[in-house]
Length: 346
Image (cartoon, rainbow, N blue to C red; front, top):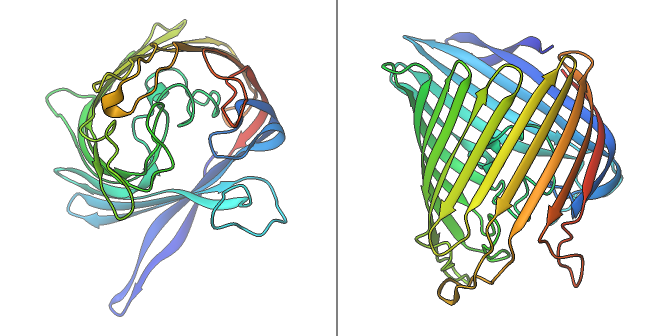
C-alpha cells in the first residue's frame, strides 16, 4: 500500500501553497546468476544480492483551470557498501538517482520532460513485465533493450477513440544502444519518436517509429550504422481471462536483423506463470555500416510467481539462450540464468 504524505511544496512572499507528495518503492532480495555476468544495472550478476530496490517520490499540485503539474524522481538502492562512490563506475554506488520527470497536464494534452530509461524497450511490448532484468532487457543482450535518455514529450488522448493515446518524443541518447550498435564511442545520438498506445478491455497495443541521427562531437565520429537509421516497433496483448497472449516485432533498415517476441501469462490464483520467448534473425555483415556478422539468437524465460498479497511476492525465474558467445577475451556469456527473489513493495 502506498503511503501518502502531505508536504510543504512552495513558500513565497504572497503565501504558501501545498502539493501532495506520494512515497512508494520496493525492496527485493535473492540469489541469481545472470547470463551476462552482470545485471542490467551493471552490478555483479551472480550470488546473493539486493536484486531490486527503489524509492519513488511523486509530488502533484493543482494549478487550476484544468491544469496540474507532477514531479517524480526515483532513487535506486543496491544494499549497503563501504566503497567510496566512484565517478566512473556504478558498482560502488549503492544509492543513486534513476528516472526523474516533470509533467504539465493541460486541457490540450500532457507536456513532459526528464531523464528516463528508453520509452520503448522491446520486451515491454510483451508480457515480459518484471521478469529478468538481465539478458532479456539489457542493452548488452541479443535484443535491443533499454537505454538512458533525456527527453521532451507531448501526449494527447484521442477523444473519438477512448483508450488511444498519441505521443511525440524528442530524445537524446548515448552510443551503444542495442545489439550491433557500436559502444564506447563518445558521440550524441538524437532520436525523435512517434508513438501510439491503445488500451481498452482485453486489448493493449503499442507502436512506434524512431529515426536516429548520430551527431559528430569533438573527438568522436559519426556512427554510420545509427546515422539515418529508421526503426519500427509494434506489439500488443490480448487477455482471454484464463491467459494473456503477447506479441512483439521490430524491424530496422541499414540491413539490421529483425527481432521477435512472444509472451504468455497464465494466472492460477495466487500463482502467476509467465513464459517469454525472443528471437533475432541472423545478422549478415554490412561493410557500409560497420556491422559484423552474427548468428541467429533466441531466448526463452519462465517465471513462476507466488503472490502473498498485492504488495509481496516470491518468484523463481529461469532463462536459456542460443546463439551467444561464451566468456572468452571479455565476450559476454549468454548461457543460462536464474533468479530466486522475495520482493515487498510499499
